[in-house]
View 1 (cartoon, helix red, strand yellow):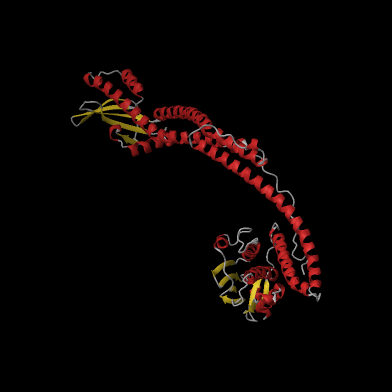
View 2 (view 1 turned 90 degrees about the vertical axis):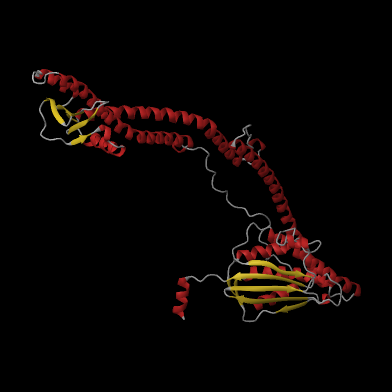
Length: 501
């Protein structure tokens, strides 16, 4: 008898609307254009800093070389004059022009002090500009810039082609002030260059990339709001670069998605109507089954001849309606797994199959009585009944009396996996059915079948974390294997079980 037990619903499951779709607007600070502008300014400033350090070091050396060259020019004039009669005022003017405390010249190994004023007791640093290397120049410039201002320097070296060596003693205060002014000017210039460069890069990349990407984003957001509106499909621009290709591909994808959504909507509407019709049809068939059961008790030979065929036809029709309703559910409930005695479950499957003795189909329950499987009893029953019904129908269709018709359900354990075998001696699956084995409406093994039984069985087994596969299918031997792993035992449960034991 067919009841309402398997009716999980007459149509697609309803539910609350999903969460609201987020807006496509992006805050100004998070926009790609803003990030691009800030990054461009930062990178240009970093580049300017990397240029500034050797630049300030070179400025320091050039400043010292200029003072040394000026001292050399004055020294040549002083050497040719009478140093003893040189007025003090002239000496002070020379030193003031150089910003030095003393000027000396070395010629032929003899050193002569040309002019002096307040000779310092000690010198903090000796510098020969022509002999300073890059690393030493950078470290010296940074040292003067950050810690100088009160030091006394001795600068010496040859100037031009002169054979004489000149030297001067001077404080580094003016040098440091000049370096600070130079650093300020370079910083302002660097900032100006970075702003101009960032602006140019920003407007160029904004026009080439950011604006098209923003238009693509807006097109996707608009399409997502109403995907069935043809006006929401993006209109690609005639560009030949990567963004042009992306726009064209997006437009094609949206068009295909729109067409697919339309087809699925039609199928969903059709499926809802079929589910409603199928539900009413199953109730009608159930009533017809009641009448056919009564007809089988009528002693009329004609009735006895046609009644079994009518019962089988009605059973087949009821099975179709149950499969359609089961497959039409939006979601199967998760398995409520328990430890199940498989032998007893197979007995129930045999009882519900109602195999007609006239078909000559033999049912063999080869499962050991103590065999246990960790599964949802109802869902595993549905898996076995679908596989078994397919096998019985395939074997019953063969009318040759000498052919063996046997359905065997066995089981074995491989570690923590229970492996259930459903074997029959039917004609085997045709190639088309094997190609679309678990696809609904395409994997039917016989004419007029829907293929829903295997699709439902495959879905239920996968919900257990297991597999359903066709091991062998040749004429006279078809084997389906169901592998269901045991649930992993939680540590706290195992400890509680050990304490109770």
